[in-house]
Length: 261
Ligand code: 13P
Image (cartoon, rainbow, N blue to C red; front, side):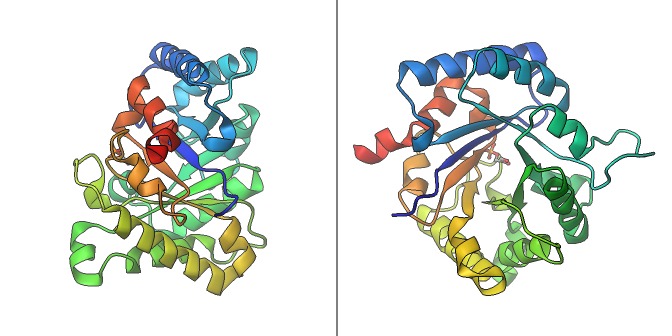
């Protein structure tokens, strides 16, 4: 058994306006409360779009909700002439605790390479926000390089050359499993998580590797979450589509119930 608290992260992507976001978070909080959900069993964090962050922060703060707040991206720069970008300082001011970095959709559509992911990770550390570094192989890479080579390489690249590493989370999301309904098997997810942990241990020491949460993402649903989290190697899930449905997402957060069955 590890003492890593499972992280249940909901990436809303470009969905929901701030009013819909508020309604979802309120309903999510009630549903989890009704089910006596405790954060020690699964830390629930939502990742809304930028325009919803302020409203949701206000709601979480006013109602003292046990729901964490994350952003979907940040600039590698701290301030200046970078039209359209959002700084780590601005996110920190909104009590943002986590930030997704290097999601495959950013790597693909915005050409974010390992150097940018490394620079954004550094920006998150500078501003005291925990980076959730997303890694994963495409179908072509899976066929030519196997399952763990790319995620391990991307992880080490993101963690290289920092003055000091702060807390971070790795999210293993095979690109071929995102939004496709295709899922890695629980065994595959556990094997890749173990390889990533081994690589972190070799490069940065066993203590850091043991403290680091490694998540699985890609077509996670309430019906399949227990399989992934049964393995001690997988410390949570990064959920896309199913995080927009309160019943599904709260079912995912309450994965222990399924494991106990
Ligand atoms: P889906 O859960 O919709 O496959 O998305 C996964 C994802 O990209 C989460 O970041």
